[in-house]
Amino acid sequence: MPKNREAARASLENLYRIFTVPEAPDSTLGAIDQAISDDVAGFLQTYIVAIERSLEEIEAHFSSASIPEEPTYVSDYTEFVKEHLVAHSVHTAAPGFVGHMTSALPYFMLPLARLMTALNQNLVKVETSKAFTPMERQVLAMLHHLVYRRADDFYPPWIHNSQSALGAFCSGGTIANVTALWVARNRLFAPDGSFRGIAQEGLARALRHRGCDGIAVLVSERGHYSLGKAADLLGLGRVNLIKVGTDAHNRIDLKLLREECRRLRERNILPLALVGIAGTTETGNVDPLEALADFAQELGCHFHVDAAWGGPTLFSDRYRHLLGGIERADSVTIDAHKQLYVPMGAGMVVFKDPTALSAIEHHANYILRHGSKDLGSHTLEGSRPGKAMLVHAGFHIIGRKGYELLIDMGIERAKTFADMVRQHPDFELTSEPELNILTYRYCPLKVQQALATAPAGQRAAINALLDQVCQLLQKHQREAGKTFVSRTRLRVARHDQELTVLRVVLANPLTTDEILGAVLAEQCEIVQQPEIQALLQQVEANFY
Picture 1 (cartoon, one colour):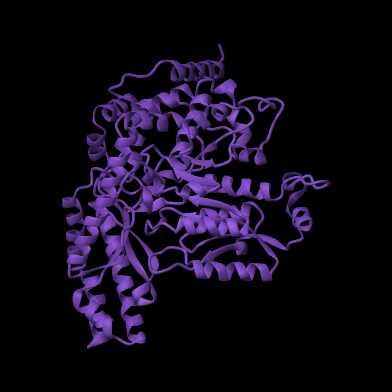
Picture 2 (cartoon, one colour):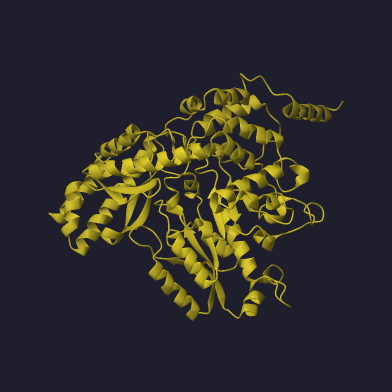
């Protein structure tokens, strides 16, 4: 047999083995898999090292654009994974990692995620997801019931109705928000007489049909950046995503909202949707949803609530009232990979009207035929994994009471940390926690006292230097790899100025009060570094 044919046959045999016979677990990915199964926390602590390499050093191992010619052994690749990928991943499950909306996962999610991958179901079509399709429909009904609290007898006619869907599973809150506004747009410009609808005739024809010069979405300045993407994708234009100012508590200012609507009328711009936020990304605050529902009704526009973060607060009997009015929304976004503790890549949007999603319905003769129960006919994404199984598992294994406990713990811990900040002379709380997110900054007591009486120009100069202090503090803490907080820029009402602030998200049930104390203690150590001390000396020079 010619050598090239022998080589080809050997390669083919290697490929066959990859798909059929796993290598010994002690030398391949099986070892990692077993270590994760036995003790996920221990695995992460063992394999993820403190941040030692710069991003540029890590990038060096991912710089070739050439695809390898020949197959290799899984065990060889495993070594690369352990040394260059796992070791330098971010330890998002660590109880001291309190800077972003990621958390430790319940242990049962890991084997279920592997099972989901092994089954490899595609939720676009019943033919590729026979049992997963009805399960996803049930999960959406459960979420719909959590939000809208309809009577139990409301759901049987709708859950498995081929002509409707109570919501849609998405890869995250971005696609969920896009889907909600897509539905709103298509319903606003529904077929009417000779007009065949915006889906058929496009935005320009739709605007002429309605006699307006554009459409707009209104949201507070704390709105998620995904809404800008939606405005872009749906043809509104980002200039018509109207970002309304907020009050001292980071909630949409209703007076400013009315003024923006007046300006839209003067420009002959039609309000497409009003978006309320239930858990702002930066501060965790909740808009006055009841008042927004009233105003949306007055405007005659779609009312969407972005509850990607705060939606699970509805599990809590103690704190559910914070989201009062959400049940009046036409659509609601909730991310499962946030406070439902599901692995990344799971978002959902539910609609009050079970027929709403028909406004974006698409069909294809080879896969999404009329009358089928295929979920792909009502989703922006086509092929999707069966992430609903993980949410279904959480609902059953954790249960409503379990989620209630998690939510209550997070909010109470945020209040505790806020008290720690208030009581520490060298920190300043910059946003009160309403849910389980808060912001603060390093600002020594004598600087706080000076700022209280300083003239505007002097305050601005001092705050600019403190911005640099907080940026360096956060950077050094991140690089040290012990604990982590994020940072952002917010307008702080009492300073009447946009400031750099530190941001903490307290959703990880493994985070303790002692760990939060350690976060502040580490920050107090970091500010002793010469680079930061030099800035603080400049701060003092501004008021002496």
